[in-house]
Image (cartoon, rainbow, N blue to C red; front, side, top):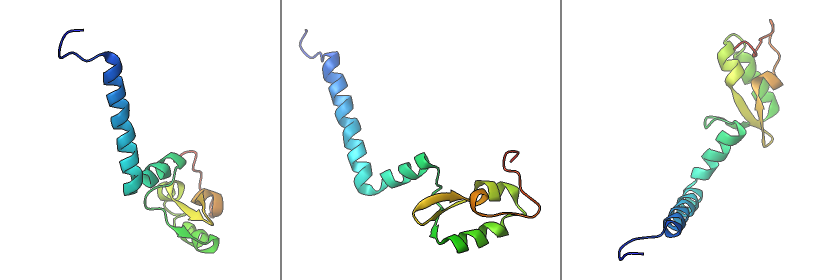
Length: 97
């Protein structure tokens, strides 16, 4: 190896170390919670509420199919979609939304 050259292994180790540093920094700054919410399918605007309030709120979205089908709440620590907790009359078909 010539003077001033780095091996591929050294470059890979540096890249992995930087990746670990970014992950650690994100976890301390709260960025990992937003990433985790995206992974489990809960939007950032999702709020924690009880089942009765979530059902009432979802019921108000029945006239707006895209909103009804895409909105979710955290109920008792579990992410739940409006289509799973509210029944609309007439029925809303989220498979077409």
